[in-house]
Length: 107
Image 1 (cartoon, helix red, strand yellow):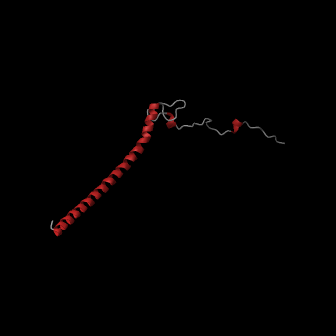
Image 2 (cartoon, rainbow, N blue to C red):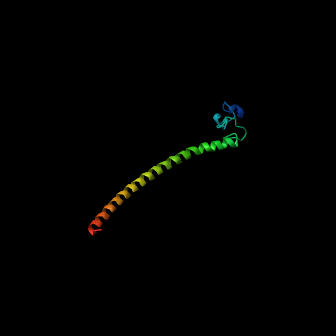
Image 3 (cartoon, rainbow, N blue to C red):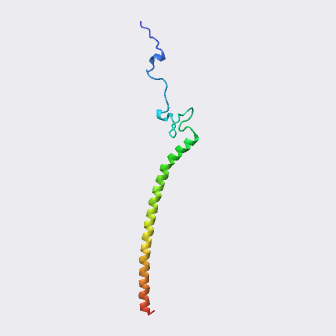
């Protein structure tokens, strides 16, 4: 009769490194200044670099906001130009009507 043999857990483990790295290798250094990150540092090495990263993230949003504002300003200028042209036409017609009315009334 065959007796089952006990296999140690270490013998069953898959070959390879037993340490799992939670960070990607590219994140081992500060993206702003390149200083190696230490301890609990995750995104930047200092308050100054963290502020620089924050500014970098906000810049695309601000650029898009500026593009949107430029479009709105252009549309507003175009609309004001249309209103001005319409008002000019209306004033010309009113002037002609006034002149014609004065001609009829003898004034």
